[in-house]
Image (cartoon, rainbow, N blue to C red; front, side):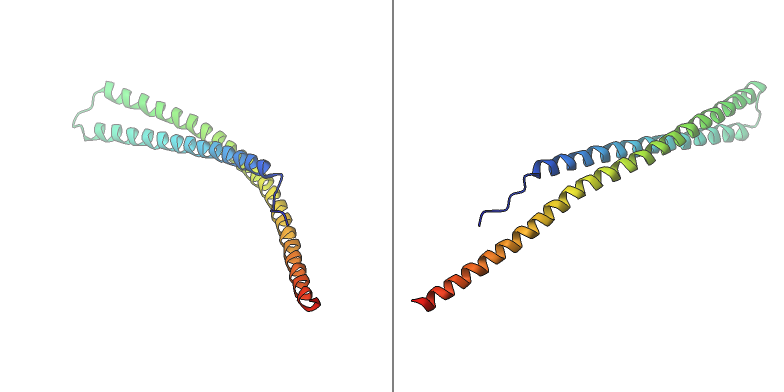
Length: 143
């Protein structure tokens, strides 16, 4: 019997490449989200440090208080911007997760077809081996 061949092997490889490409996009989005979170944490840290420095100083001038107020307003505005970016990035991550799932499903579909065809080929192969064994056994008796 001839060897098992699956004509759609290139399609399987292509589907796997698509899955990997979608996974890479998802990883990039997660990295973007981590960057947003890191920037938010950095802003909070800088704001807290500025407040602590001003409190630790024995005498604060009006200019320093005004600068702190301006910096606090700036950090609040930046946090709002980061919150908007975080929500948008979260939506992109959700959409990309669905895309990854769809690509994986497509790839798995072709792989299942291959598995079924391989199982069929193996059963035919086993039947052929059994048939050849029977013929060999009968050939001994006929001699």
